[in-house]
Image 1 (cartoon, helix red, strand yellow):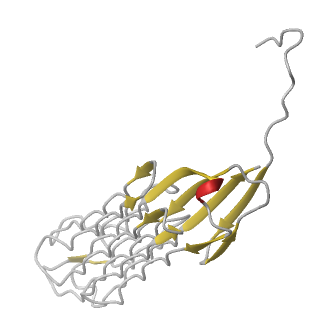
Image 2 (tube, rainbow, N blue to C red):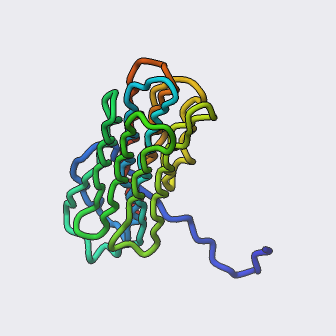
Amino acid sequence: MTRLAGDPITAPPAVNIQVFTSSGTWNKPAGIRYAWVRVQGAGGGGGGAATTAAAQSAVAGGGGGGGYGEDFIPASLLSATESVTVGTGGGGATAGNNAGSAGGDSSFGSFITATGGGGGSGSASVGSGGGAGGTGGSTTGALVSTQGSDGTSGRGAAGIIRTGGAGGSSFFTGRARDAASGVGSAGANAGNFGGGGTGGLNAASQGTARAGGDGSGGVVIVISVL
């Protein structure tokens, strides 16, 4: 676009960016016009798999991804300080037929809350089937929001390929990889913010219970426009 003679030259606005990876307090910068607030809930942990015998498998579900929301908040609505909560990633299940823990909720004051993803279900030693994936988190109070995706269920049958459930995705991360197929394997930990951990798997006659992968923590990003 060509600037016409006499058009004013406007400098771009200054911004103040604060990234919270743990809970704390946001302090309102002087001269702020509005804040762009982005809130990501934590991911849930993957389920654990029990010890197997011959002709059995155990394939646990993946944890759900955390919810995400964002909004533009006018300065007039913001207090001098606002409480910031950042959810902790859900722990992967201990080895055995155990469920993963849910991810923690993240929030900015009373404006936006993004809930954590649910933990994946554990899996007993069975001939086929597997544990269910955790439910993805949701968001309240946001102008724009994205629900975390559900973790997938463990898939397997004795003598056939077995795969631990994948962790659910969040706004900041794609779906976590599946656990290894066909052999005993602990679930993988999620990466980035808000992803779910994968479920553990145990193939026939492996003889050792397997743990689930950890979900990743949330984040709150506040971009103040001055």
